[in-house]
Image 1 (cartoon, rainbow, N blue to C red):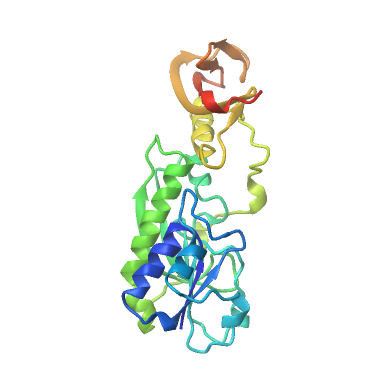
Image 2: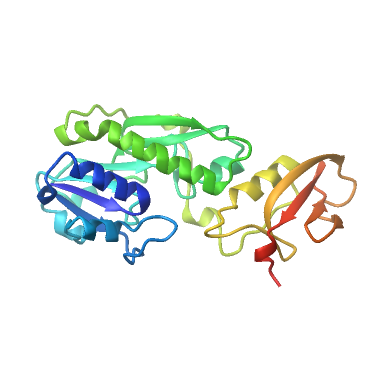
Length: 275
């Protein structure tokens, strides 16, 4: 039995990929609590499973399946391995583990000015994204990538990585290596408060620029500076002379703000101005 647990395009695409290889009676779907069965900016996994007549079951119903292959694809529930009879529990994580375990992997690599990220297929163990690594794909983060751009890369390469290893997962003939404990980093749900995002101008211009692009994910939020929504930032060649965070000039389309070293130009999202 293959149980696919998760959401969005990656879960839908992998369900359809699995249906090309194994009988649909050997597949079940476990959907996230927020999935209402309606397509949005991404496809609904609940809707896709129903269209393919794949049973949608609660997580608890697969605990006792001895031959279970459990595949987590953006699943929203922490998995406890001791509750399962099977040990074939796998997850796709959106980072190059052991770096960036935990939350907000579409923001923290950008905030930290990383030039690379990736996706990891790993075994699920008792820790948070600490299981042995089966395979990874690395890819570049460009200097213009924002949070949404990085997330879409995760979806693309995460789907590719799962397909690459799908037959091995089915056969059980995988080789997994423990994570390097010396390179591990972790960010909790409390590490970013998306309900109260603030741009910290007491930083060099590159750090401000990275904050703007890390928090730019237009289907969820855009950064707000002085009650204006911002959709783009440019670092100027002008050295900042005023207090960091001071508005140097402003017009209908943009404002120029000082930082600790160079002024930045922040462009307004005209249809999302906060009054």
